[in-house]
Length: 476
Image (cartoon, rainbow, N blue to C red; front, side, top):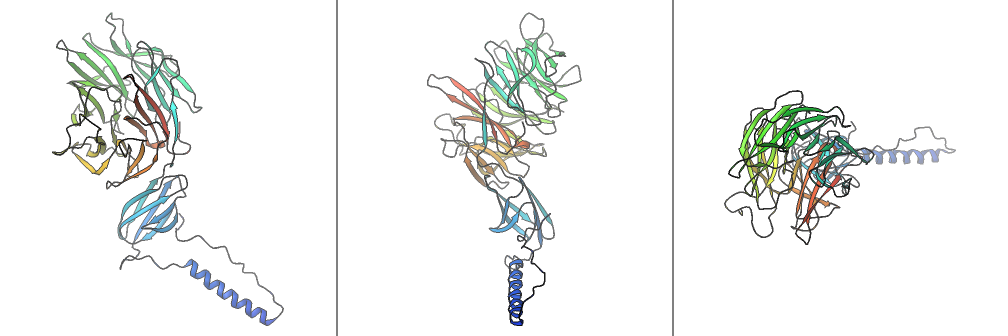
């Protein structure tokens, strides 16, 4: 790994010089000595000191992309990757690279230890692509990432027909799954199977079967059928490992209330296991899985209240995490929550809590959501300093990214929050702004799907989906 001290000087030509006279030789010797002394001054640099501290800590800095310039407390230290000697204590490290947003970290350099910083630099102006329906009269009901960064989206057609499409590496959409779907469809994380809901031969028309099919639509296998009750299946979701499926059902009670049933099914097992039955509705497509597939976060609706909840798929343990809103408009089907890369913590956006906070703000402009963090095993929350934003995500370098509208109107921006809660806004995103927005993140490939809902003058609404890439050559 190169030492980030100074750029090497060009090698000095050491070949002997022949001069016609002794005087000329003497002047050449004097000139050479002066040049060597000047070179020594340029190469040597006194040790950096802060007060009486010495260079007793080490910092290893790498970045994606490589080649970013490094500043520590305002002093230049070459480019990434680099190993730097510096005094112990809190240090402010800033990385800069052309066409990328500056990124600043606060690190704690410890005496006689090596601190590692693996930084991420994203494009200052990301590349965007609008996802468009492939058929006239259709709308995009949902869009998600596969594990390799490719995008799938589900079309809603007139009636109740649903189709699943894949945006391939050629930027052309390709059809996936059954020839004609009537309910939710979802591709496995590796894209090798499609799960779908179907109607059995019963006469009431309920979606009551789970099926699996190859991406080309052949080799269909019916995996499960609900018992003969009033329940109907409304949604499904793959776990990150592709070995389990979440099945969500709703049962309409005689008193008009709705009860939700959540089951987990192994992709190779016959009978799903009931995890949870509770009053209220699960909002379809709102699931965010922990990286190891042990827990998931999702949205629920009870009367007009939208809440964020957690479920442990091993034990069925249910946790009520936070209230998000209380109004008649349906939310976008994206839970404003993300897991840390190690799965031990989560970050989410919710209205501010406390005695001085407005009660879900029923009138006037809404204040920006506050960012909270919680431990996965306790779900005990605390604010991330004074940070605000929507649709947060946790990057591997420890920072949190979120979407925000700094002035309550105008374009969306990418907000970067360091682990101490200090926020910095990047350039505005080059896409249309609206009051309602949400994002699904694929941080492994530095990209997001941003859903933006706009309202027309006749009271109707339209949701557009944008693929936003923050890295050159992001996988598809």
